[in-house]
Amino acid sequence: AQTVTQSQPEMSVQEAETVTLSCTYDTSESDYYLFWYKQPPSRQMILVIRQEAYKQQNATENRFSVNFQKAAKSFSLKISDSQLGDAAMYFCAYRREGNNDMRFGAGTRLTVKP
Amino acid sequence: EAGVAQSPRYKIIEKRQSVAFWCNPISGHATLYWYQQILGQGPKLLIQFQNNGVVDDSQLPKDRFSAERLKGVDSTLKIQPAKLEDSAVYLCASSLVGIGDTQYFGPGTRLTVL
Image (cartoon, rainbow over all chains, first blue to last red; front, side, top):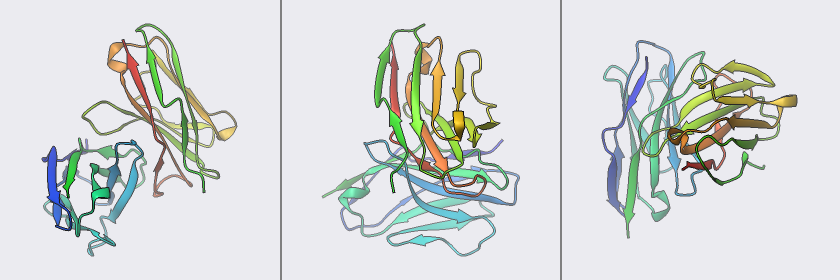
């Protein structure tokens, strides 16, 4: 079974600084997708970034980038120039190719200090 | 473009009572998902529909949970009878076709069972 582990229940960052959220996963598959979702207090889950396992290049979306290490089964999220609006729960998720069952980690609560 | 709509946003019931949640996916999205998110955990898939057919309900507690998606658009999730451990946020998500497409989440319904 695929599992996703987020080892940091809480993280904090100063506004305008950079923070990295960790995620590791366990799978025997070679083709899969990895995601980072943001869940603000309003509860609406918003896709932050997505990575296909077959791509070696790390995905980037504006201030958000990932460090995808396939051999180590690691998928960390880096948030640059942190903003107050980045404060939320962040969930790492895994989905294998050919399947829509996404497996989520337990989440990391990010606090941004002004 | 309107997002995924869910109602109600909050529901409090006594154990052994019944409850129903409603979801309206993004227009044109063929695939619809119901997730259960227990406090402090990531979402867990309960059921997935493709149009009005069930694709995956392997994690749905079928002795008390049921879901339907009539006409392939709106969906309802029902719990009958509710137990204390059903207290959670129930998230609905939709995607365009299915495998490989990004899932868009609704705001969720927070259920408290007393």
